[in-house]
Image (cartoon, rainbow, N blue to C red; front, side, top):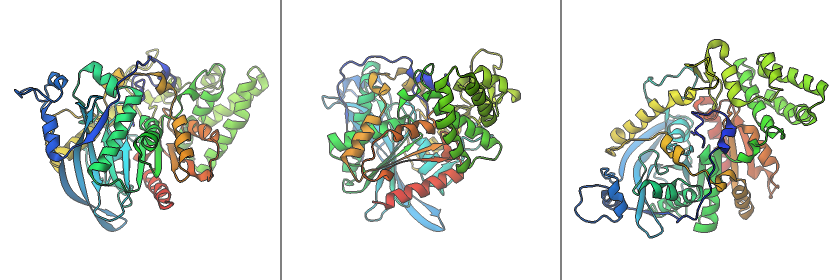
Length: 521
């Protein structure tokens, strides 16, 4: 989670992802190097303005920020399945360096480790770009859970953390990494260099891959089994980081979990001619209607998918066959529960932004692109287009930020004097939307799976998600060659939306599926 590359909070149509793409000049690569607690404090001091000595990186002097603290640790426990599990929480930093070896940024991570032999380790990335890893941490797989992101939740609700019965901590250590500009991670160079080193596709993959490598070296974990989980744009990062680690840094992942991934952006293009954009969105819109009627089941969704890939596809392809079109429009109206006139005038091709304003219009509400059954009142109901923030984002940022800052500074004791960016609009706004981004990550996914016959990839989605619809992953994986065991790459769906793990049942079911994947190694 969370913010799509084109700021879906402001423009909820997925096709807007194609906007503002720019060419990319040759950029210097950036890397990270592990730092000890003492080194962290020393490196952080380079950013402080009061030092009379030249800093290691003179550009850091333009950022008059207090230094980040040394790594901090605390002991905690959780009762999981009736058993007590003790673990260590560490908040620490890794230094990102430019091509000349100078400190260019500080990557902050939160790690949960259990003192036991032969433990796997899983690295977690959220997306945006501009999202910190707190959403996977407190939402999905960390040992603490924050109830937020569901219909009826309020930004002023208490930010209370509870034990997470869906955590993965009993079968893997967890390392949540915040890219530069998110969480407390920060650049130490000027704005132009920041964009070149951190806000561009390939440099982003390279320094984050190096962060994984450096954490492994720093903590003597190179021999551990290694996994990666990425959500949304983190799902775009996942295959690319996996392949970069595998082919360039000599570190092989045992498994990858892609949560609501932004995997194949070209699938949404040319809706005037191609049926693919409409095939991708209809099942998720139908799933939301089935959920509202308490009829959402795997069996019901199988029928939806079968229709989408059968008669619906044929009706779209035939186009001017009026009898086929009329039958399709009636079927789509029945499936989605939408106003018949709206469906007819849309030609059965349901544009996301229009749907989100239409589906709850009678209640004066908007649906979220991340889960159209999460709503808020539309403050501008008569405007020609949506002017409000996304309903889910509007309720999620405040409790998430409060919970994480309190956890880091009070519970763990990492006393930082800096702003925490759970979701940075600045990062997304300044991101270089280059050709590499448009290419998605399917190429790297295929290459990583082909190179390692033991690598397993699980792609997981919520049925209601319209920002990264599950049908896009099904269509993408259906076109991949079967390289050995066909179950090595799977697509699993759950009730809910982009952050389906906010539903406890879906979160626990995800834990079960992932545990089974780990057991196969």
